[in-house]
Each structure stands twice: as C-alpha cells, then as structure tokens.
Image 1: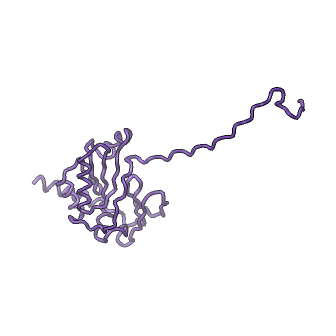
Image 2: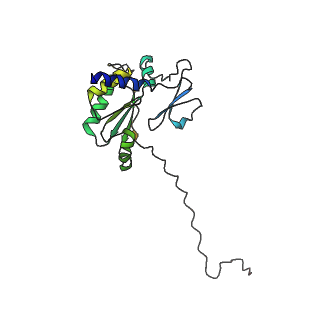
Image 3: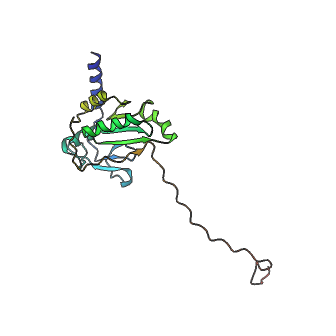
Length: 201
C-alpha cells in the first residue's frame, strides 16, 4: 500500500512539471536549467528550441517525435562528481541503455561540492532529476520506475548519430577577464636633459 501511494505521489509531482503553453521558446542553459520564454533568446543563453504554439511543447529535431514529447515535459539531468566512481558510471549506463537524452552536471571544485547539497538536496552521488523529481544516489529500480512514470521508453529510440552533450560544471564558470596589452616602457630621462629643447619655465 505504501508503494502505491508513493508512486501516485511521484506521478502527480511529475505532471506538475509540464511547460507553459504560452511560451514560444525552450532554452536549456549551460548549467542544465530549463526555462520557457516568449521572447527571442540570445544564442549565448544556451540551446534554444521553438515551442509549438498549439501543443506548448518544444521541438528538438535530433530526437524522434515520441521521445521528444517526453523529454520536453520531463527533462532529465544527471548530477555527478569527479570522485563518485562506479555509481556515476552505472547511472550513465542505465540512461544510455534506455536511450534517455540528458544533461550532465559535474562537481569537481571545492566550491561546486559545497553547492551540491543546495542543488541536489543531499550529499549522495550520483543524483537524477526527472522533471521536478530528484533521486539521490544510484538505485536502478528507483531510477527505472521514475523514468517509466515520466513516459521514457525502456528501449532506446535515439538515432544512431545522436551524441549526449558533454558534461557541464555544477557552477557556471565565469570567463577570465581579458589581459591588458603590455605597455611600451617609457624611456628614462637623461640627467640634465629632461627638457631637451632647453626651454626654461
């Protein structure tokens, strides 16, 4: 009984994550955050996909239509750490086997590890976010059940040439400020000739 209640609650949580039908664009930022907007985004804001005005769903032409619908409603983010070893490898393997398109965010620096709990909700790694539902730690059964409820197929529907985007840092890196060009050294004044014209004031 407890399991059925838990699954029902999970399903209700996932359904709350559907995008707004009034949005014109879906934007997946460099940090993996998904936003919907009615203004034309800048290219540097992330991956931009147009949203169908009648369905309110984004169009990613790299994915088959059925998979595109699920990925638009319940985008998947995999949170990993540079030292989480086998758990992260198993998580990637499960997503690859099912053909789940996802964004990976990795914690490497001390600052990113400190931000982990705030972003994920706990210290366990890896973590999987499906829509608004976050699972901490790798458990194949729990991950499969959550992906099933979201509507992801058990067998991969990804095209043969599909490539998973490279992992991005947990915290977006700020570009280093440009270095100032070197200045030409000033010629030292010669004793008695700091005023070579000989004009006195």
